[in-house]
Each structure stands twice: as C-alpha cells, then as structure tokens.
Image (cartoon, rainbow over all chains, first blue to last red):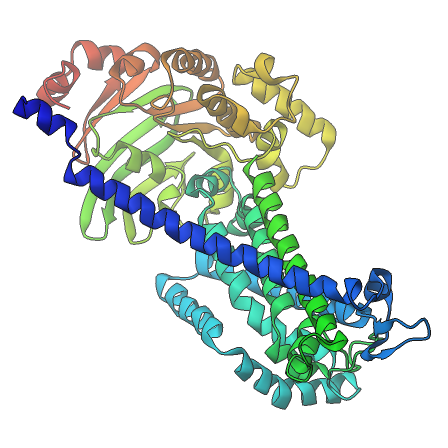
Length: 305
Length: 251
C-alpha cells in the first residue's frame, strides 16, 4: 500500500494518548458519581426505615418533641419527635451566620480594599490558620472558655444554643471570609475608578458599588458558611448540652441533629428503631445540605443576570 | 484667553522611572483639546494627573504645579472629592456600573447627597440628551446598563459624568474600543459639549484629533514636543518630530 496513505490512516501516538486521557477522566467521574449516588441511596433507604418498618409517622418525626426511640408512645408508635434537634440545628446555624457575616465582610474588605500587601498576607494566614484548627480543639476551647463565659454573662448552665453559636461563629468565619474575599476580588477594578472619578469617597465606593456588585458572591459565601455550621458535629456537641428538649431559651441545654447523631450512633444496634431513627436524622442532614447546594446555585444564577 | 487648567513643570515618577519629564501646558476654558502621541508617551498619565487619579496607584510621585482656576490641586487643602466633581473623567473601556441606566446616571448625584426625585429625574433627562442617547433609552431607564452595546455604554458613561455638571471633562481614548459609527456619534456630541465644557481628550486617532479638537499637544517619551492650534500643528508643525509622527514616519 501507499506508505503516505498508510501513515495517515494509522492512529498517531498523540491521538491514542487523547483516548486514554478521556477514558481516565470518565472513569474518575463515574467512580465519584457512583459513590455519591450510593451514599444517597444508602442514607435514604436507612432513613425511611423508621417510617416503613417501625411505622413511625412522618408528621410526628417533623413536629413531635419527644425523642426516645426505644419507647413506644400511647399510639404504639416509637417516640421519634425530631423537632427539638431540627430547631436546635437551625438556631445555631442562623445565629452563627448572623454573628459571623459582619465580621467576615469587614475582614474581607480590609484584605481587598484597605490594607497594604503586608497586612493582606498576614490576614490571609490568620484566616487559613482558623481553617486548619481541628474541630475538637474548637469544642475544647468552647467548653473551657465559652461555656463559663456564657454562664456568667447570660445565665443558665452555660451549655446551650448560644455557646454553640459562639463556637460555630469562629468556625464559619474563615469560610465566609475567604469566599467573600474572592467575590470582592472579582469586582472589576474599573467600577472603583469610575466611582472615584465621579467624586465618591472610598467608603461610598465600597458601600454603593463594590459591595453591591459582590452581593451574590457574598450571599453564596454566607450559605456555604451555614452549610458548614449545619453539618458541624463535634464542637457543637461539646458545648450545647445535649438535651433533646425543645429549646425555650438560648442558654438552656439543647441538641442538634449532628450532636444527637454522634452521641447515639455508638450506643445503638444496627436494625433497631433507635438506630433507624438516627438514620432518619442523617437523611434530614443530607437533604439540608442538598438544599444549601441548590440555594447557592440559585443565587449564582441570579447574580449572573 | 481664560486658562482653566494650568500645569507647570510636571514630573511624574513610577518608583524610579520618570514617566513625565517636566510638562508645562495650559488649557483655555471651553473647546476640545487633544493630547496625541504614540503608546507609552505619557499622555494618559498626564491626563490622570489632572483629576488626581494617579493617587490610587502605589509608588507614584508627582512634582510641579497643577492649577484649576488658579488653585493648586495637589495642595493638602484640596479635597479630591470636590476636585473630581469639577473635573470629570471618561475612560477607555466603557465602565457603567452593573445597575439600571437611571441609577448609573444619578450615581454622582446620590453620593453628593441629592435626594430630590424631581432634580434627579431632570438631570437624567438632560444628561442623556446631552450625551445623545436619550431617544435610544428613554423607555427603559430601569434596564441594566450592562445590557447595552459598547457604544451606548460609553455614552451612558459620558452622561453619568455630565450629570454631575463638571467644568472639565477628561476623556482617555473614549472611542478606541468602539466601532466607527459609535465613535462618530461621540465626536458629534463632543462638538456640541465644547460650548459649555472644557474637554481634554487623549486619542490615538490622529484623524479624530484633527476633526474635532481646537488645540493639539504632541507628547513623546514623557515630554511635550509641541502644542498649538490644531490647524497649525497638523499643517505646519514647528518641530521635525511632530511632522514625522503626523506623517506616519513612526509611532
């Protein structure tokens, strides 16, 4: 055969590499997808067992306040009222985000607009350091510093939602700060020039243009921070008091979905009501993180308009 | 003639590098004044000295004397906020804020504390009319300015500057990012504006300078080579370098 024709028709080494690369990356994607799907399927299957096998009602689960899965109530159904934990989780999350957001925005503005490059590098490493501290250390500090502080300044035993929120405040601060920094950095420089050239002060420029342009990004940052706070288990469990009661004040012992899970998972036997009920809590957590994810997508889609 | 801006022996250093080497140049009130020269000759840098936009850049040192109506704009008493309200600026890239057209135009007024809706509405209409874009946008003032074409955006930016009623408008290559039709619209608009405002325009485009400007100043390597009436500069320049540049022998 004609050698040139032969050469053209034969696959080159480079195109073979192309095919191999594609196969490798598809394999990685499929593996990860499979892991995610099976986690969802597993938690889902386990989580609904409380309702299908143990015949607890979904309404009791979401609105009931008695959490004692080993005991059956008057109607013969297990007591799996998860409302105290759901309320507890939302309370610590919202409070932590409420405390952390102003500080995070302030720090991020300092880092992007006000500081010298030295100050920026210093704050950057402070923020990164906060991320690196293990949550058990946060919990321990919370136990020895925050709990006594809350007890002497706000009353109560010191254990409760307020202490949990204070600890989470420090834990979500770096998440919100670094993502806010990113969104502030993404604001085009020429907005600032245009604003200053119109006779705006630095502060007016930050307030009216830069923060406004970065708003979708900042909201995304806050939601990510909330997702982190919602899922945090160990540190919260150490300071919240772990009483499955509907919280009546911020300084009474309470519990969150995660704290009940970490406390209970070692003390229950697979397949029992108590164990299944914990899986139901895990399912709620999973659905919430899915919800936070969707929220982030909606915000960024709106921001792009 | 009345000089509105006078500059004497202006030197500007970026760190150690001397970008402006002693510029002495005056601008009479009214009219269009073009600054021309090849890239990197210092004409934009010089322009940004006139409303102190170089203050934003780190490591910049400026010496010399720059006066607006006889007042030293680099004296410690000068408030950059007031200065920039009197000396507005239009940039090379159209840079509207990601707000509605209306909010873009009233931005300078809002930061100055004007809240009266009637005043704001009136300024929006006059400024957009002056910037020759009223007819195109009057029905959707609430629409985002980012949705407009580049040429429209640039006219919005000019209207935004006009709304503040400055005395001097600095234009840094305002048409170099635009198509020829948009450019000629802006040129026509400037010819009308020059009755009321002093326009100082940096341009790469020598035809543009010759079409619209009253005076032209030629910059080269951080020095002012020649300045004078545009007709004179383009037809009978005194300096050989000006002649070479205008006839396309370099640059």
